[in-house]
Length: 339
Image 1 (tube, rainbow, N blue to C red):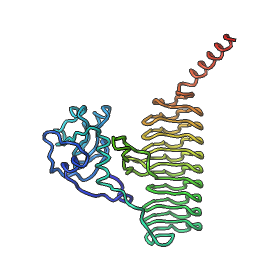
Image 2: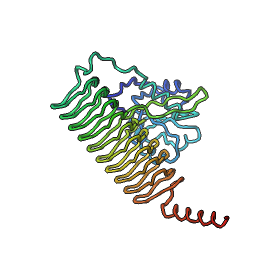
Image 3: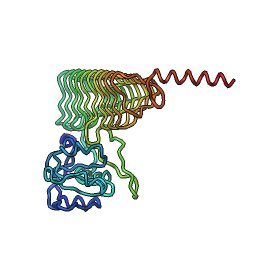
Image 4: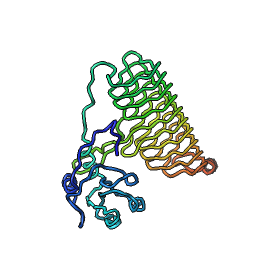
């Protein structure tokens, strides 16, 4: 369930009404009067919550899910077993697009909250904390002790910041929970929408981004980095991780503890980066990739497959570093022969 500190939920809605909103139909046996209270992911769903299933690799997870209803395609409907947990099935031409419509029903767009003055009356400011000129602290935000908030920084509604943190000038922090001793350099943007759209005949339909950003203790984030909030699950930065300037981390990425992320690299959505990983400058990592503990990725690499624990890779596409250098040496010898 999306964090109520950040998101106001509508509903509940009858299953038949939700199906009608997104142009889907109920499978035989599904009760149109079934009340759906929220959206969820397959692995976190509870009874009365609805998920979507469009990737066969999740069939095992779906079998053990506690969801009350599932949106899927005609092709995959036979893989959903309605008898398990009395699960209802909704069939849509494009399950992801249908789920975006359902998510918008539960969490419609809303305008940012307006407030008078720079510090909301219900914001909590810890002892010894310094607010620089122009800093804005929004409703229900909580800032720990001995933290410094830089000039013109904006701390959004419900945001939590721990003790002994440093938040640089011109930063914006929304939809995030930040631990202790975190250093955030100037110009960092945390908690904005992830880049989530579904192509439809009517154009690109926006998928609501309903997760958070969780930043653990002792993290340092370089200037002008962007960290998107999760789509459904959270974006997480592990304890002690250090991030260089100009790094982009997309929605629902999980970065482990004590990682090093060097300047100008980008991680696409839903990647999982293990503990102690080192990623060089200008690396690009495709979505849904897993990088194992202790792996190293050399600068400018393009990662489009999973990287095992302790593996060292280089090149585009990324491959084991010894293989990369052998290929380069072979190519060099071949070009010399041509001469």
